[in-house]
Length: 319
Image (cartoon, rainbow, N blue to C red; front, side, top):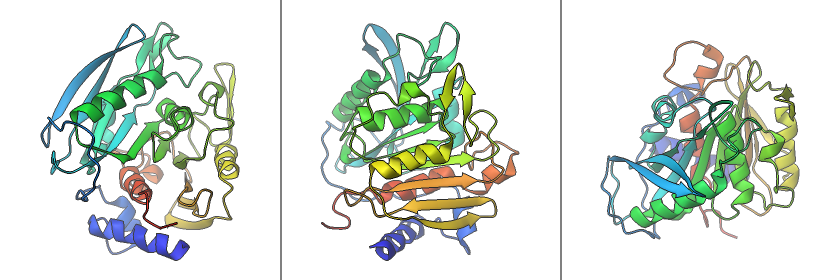
């Protein structure tokens, strides 16, 4: 089973043109990939390829905003994966789209906007500084309903991605919206207690988390911020592993300063947990277009996230 997963993983990258002369080169490559044929379109498919549209929805009396990007090659006759991408605290959706390269993946990409709170910048409900009016779980439900009605979505391949405070929300959504997401990905995620509520007995979900050991904003070894504890990242990942009853992992170095640990054999079959530790990495999106912080920039998070998501296809491994 493990060898088959590894072979399929390499095949996904090779087909996408991400494999270079070495594994490290593969991880550096920007994601340029082709869509795969999928069945099960549920929407009216009244949008066209290579477009980006703004949408507004009222949630519990609060006006919320998000943008929908359709990939090149999008077809109203072919169900397409959907990625909801949540920015970090203080960011805007457009900025997040620009530096993450998620819109280059063969998926419908949705970029929600967090609410600005009276005490600070835009953020999500998974943190103590969030706007008290923010119900981002309900906001996510509304987004899923709207996008499914207007585009051809493959409901078996819906994913969430988040960075920092947005990563905490992605983790919260994995447990508060069971059955909605095939997998979630988090980069430099902040796991405040507010983002853990109601998750004690949630079913396991495939997760991948990227974190730098020199992150000054969300320290790898944990801290206290805003009066609340932030757990050490190995502690948080360990909780997911125990919840899914995973067998011992496979660990390998994928770049000079980067070690990836994968728990392939979990319960139920098909659940995976992965952690990418960037030694010396800081609070940034790996492979972003920004300069500096070299340890974090020697892998490409968007490419690795898509590789991880591609392994979460139902029925891929049989029963």
